[in-house]
Image 1: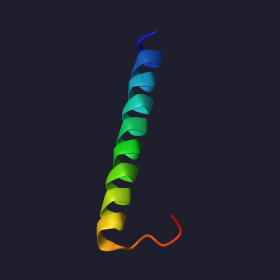
Image 2 (image 1 turned 90 degrees about the horizontal axis):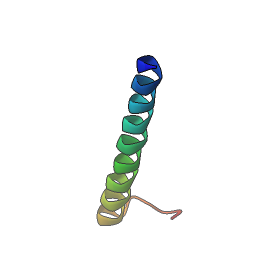
Image 3 (image 1 turned 60 degrees about the vertical axis):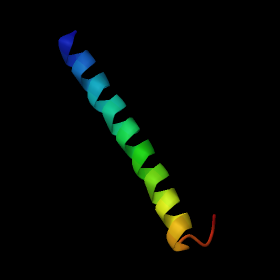
Image 4 (image 1 turned 30 degrees about the vertical axis):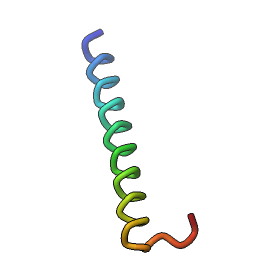
Length: 38
């Protein structure tokens, strides 16, 4: 059971990190005007 919980923690951390990365990338893109499509 501990292995499954460890995998779940890793997946959750990866999702949170990816979400924060995309948010920061979007904010930086808006500030620098690098984004064109969105």
